[in-house]
Amino acid sequence: MRGAKTPQLNRLLRLQTPVRTPDGAGGSRVEWQELGQVWAQIEARSGRVGRGDAGDLAQISLRILVRALPQNAPLRPRPDQRFCEGNRVFRILAVADHDQAGRYLMCFAKEEVAA
Image 1 (cartoon, rainbow, N blue to C red):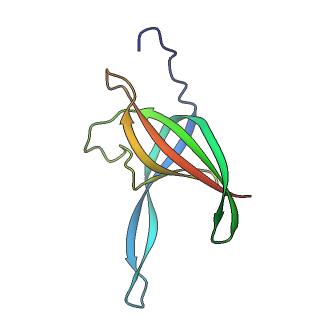
Image 2: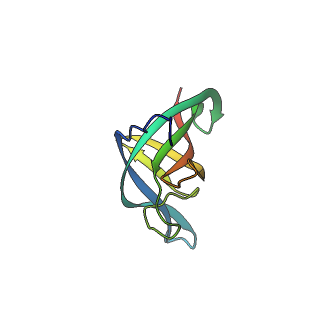
């Protein structure tokens, strides 16, 4: 990243993955299993208000930068996972290489907050 600013990975996020468990009535429910913590840089990109099941939702698009890991590493983010910080939840939509050297991953995510 010659000539580029060094990323400021200053937010500690929990990476979680969905796990389906039986609900006792013949179906299943999704529970979130924590995989570990990663340091990240979060950048808000855009926002809008939409309708959700419980009313209006503010939807914020984010770019979350994390250190790259090999494809099979347990802490390498995937689009079906999410990051959490306190009560905040960032649903991962897509993951791409951030730089040609492969040092960082860019996670495109969405946060939804009751408006």
